[in-house]
Image (tube, rainbow over all chains, first blue to last red; front, side):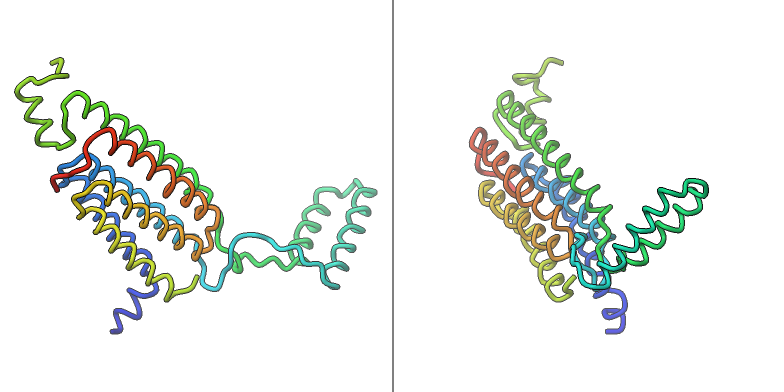
Length: 172
Length: 81
């Protein structure tokens, strides 16, 4: 029970990630039908994406979109920032150091705490991975159709038997 | 992130993955893979990755299901395992 509370529940995403990945790998290796192999590949890919998205999750965080709410305090600070910006434009001598301080002040005034938002970097990377996964699946299905046209079957053992006896579509 | 919701979706995810690999009828397997994709889309919306969630719903569940159905209609529907 202690193990369950300490290691399983807080890291449940990672446990399921490993389970799904092994289900996909097992399907890719042992299934006889080519379409079933591709279903396994699809599950494998989503398992990896699940791992990466789970890295970006923080407890008590929300979606990484910034709201524009203008209450009193924020309006004042925004005004102050604008003023100091003008001041900054007039005074060009100490640009480097002023700029650094100013940036820091903006960050503190707006009260944007990164702990309140999920980390968007893994999300953006995985957006690319989803598109790559679908294009991989498309190419693999096209090759499967071509294999079916040549060998009349999608079962791996039948295709291998036909290759062995030098069936149609075999150039070697 | 809502922990009970998370755990329920993850368990259903493993169940649908196993069923889609178990079913002999390839069209049925594809449909269950679509259910799997929508479940994982729900999981990502719940984990705060909304952009990934709607990409998965459009591309993962929509387009890849259509690709698979097209291939199954051009080849054979029955699988030996």
